[in-house]
Length: 146
Length: 92
Image 1 (cartoon, chains in turn purple, cyan):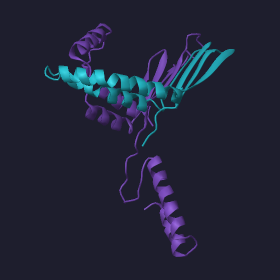
Image 2: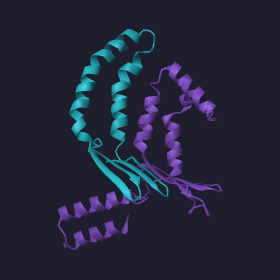
Image 3: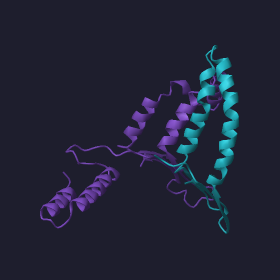
């Protein structure tokens, strides 16, 4: 049990706060636990629910002063990724084939029909434990969830 | 239950002449509802006709899927900066 919750219960036992106040405080500490990486209300740590995928592109070392140095900061709601995948499932087969061809032309050999929500969930879950940093000579790419 | 996006914030322009625009998306909701209601009979008809050949489902699921995407747009932020230009899009 978290330290704050113990303190609230102790205050209640000592009649320093009412039952309603204790209930309100316990609710607040529980939601705080979800917002901070872990929640220990039932003894076991619970994973935080990730809400956004962040992609940041910054100029690499030595290129900050370049006139073409770009900074890109994108925050994508995880729900939007889910909704987008569901929407791609509604694509008619001929449209999907055209999309594959266009992607292949751009050098992306990726089958959208093989993209499953479960796989994306696993990927996002994995990203909540790690951050991806790619650094080339010109720029730094940082991908993480928050 | 989450609420739909209500505002679109746009900021663009050069460093010395930036433009800020707040678009209240909720003003568009009545028009959106009217368009969707007008589309429903056609989509249902198309779904019914094409159900036999296995292509009815996309028509039936089209409006819920589009609404889900629209709902999920809340919180999207895109910011692109370079030395001279700045573009910022935020949906709240």
